[in-house]
Image (cartoon, rainbow, N blue to C red; front, side):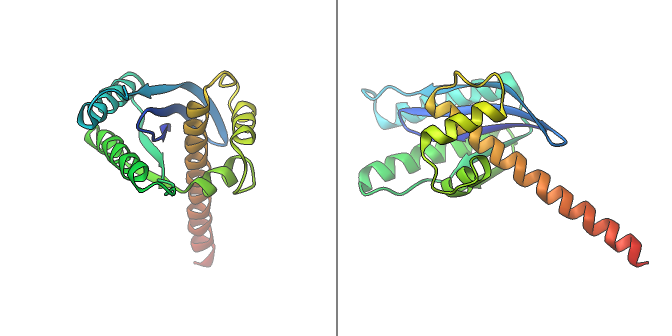
Length: 172
């Protein structure tokens, strides 16, 4: 499964593409889509759309995983981030990708083992789990962490489902 992780931001949106095969992860690419703060909000959302659309077209992921919005103390910033996130969710959906959303604490726990890990801990673990991603920017490393979280969750669910099928066959 090829998946894209997305760390939403109005000025800088991180993205990271990973291939998950069995229990192995492989780094494919990462980067940041930027919008110009001097532009109107509508133009900035369009910049995010076109940037992410180009990444999706270039990498052809099967699924998208997006970090949920962390609500901060500044309502105006939270609203703008929510609008950026909405544009990014829509972009993935327009490409027909199933979109999964994860809370920041769940992502950190999946990657570091602790739900309140700091950004540097996440970045170091992403580098260890995905050789080749060590030079990723902070935003891209966060997006790769989202992708890792989804890959781990998907693998766990698949193991549960196959275990339930095996248990059902043994019950017969």
